[in-house]
Image (cartoon, rainbow, N blue to C red; front, side):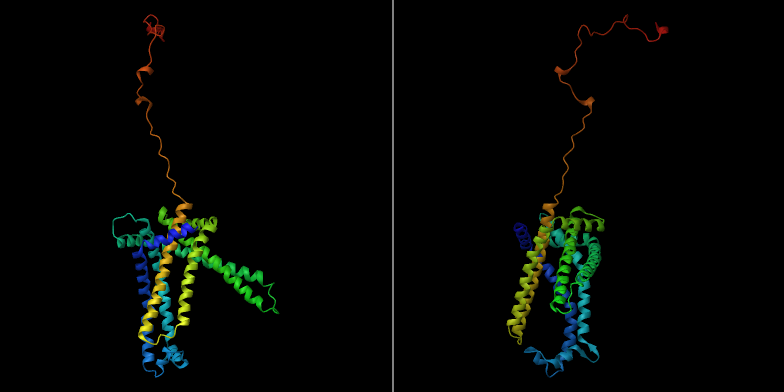
Length: 335
């Protein structure tokens, strides 16, 4: 297990161009909600005498100006941009995954990195997008069933007089949803890897075959994903701790430092994502090796087989050719 995770991290380390390209793409996506929100809030704060307060501490008056001004909600502008980013990220993830797999599969290809990346992204885009839709529908149905089942089983155990019971049921529900959600998301990754290897065309068949693969190798698939996700969690906790213990960014230097640290965290997230794909690809290669059929024996017609002189038939005296007198005609009229 450790060797597979190390292999995934090494794979991401050998492809820095891939990590930087994905980081740059998601950086451009972040500009979609950032630019409208910046324009709106800059207009709102530019006329506020208390705008400088937010550089040092939270101000309720400034917050009210940011939330609504002239009948327009600034948070609404931000949320609309965020939804747009989520949609674009969902669609582009299919393209990105295809590019990642193509780059990892063609290390020995002499063509340029960008050529291979966009070739894989374009080749698998529609199939990977359909896989995402199939996985999303299955995830929605499964989480709904699991949540309803947990609530139904826990309702008799809930004691109104014991307050922690409701919290425990809620925590159990969240844990179950996380485990089930991880199952279907892992199946999506392995389905895309399967399609890229086998060039499958049936997305339903590929996804449910990958779901069965994850269930059959549950310790391996979860054992590879959990440590990488744990690394990501540690990275996020360190970032939140930095924001908590450091003073507010009240100068341009502090703002630039915070921006650089944030981008380093985003770059680390992309690195770990590529590492996870590399590790999952390694698991698929090990657990589902390609069966190469043995070469069939060449068919040689019997008439073309040359016999050696020792094997050539010989005629003995007893087996000499019959004479004309010994030949009995089949038809008496020919005698």
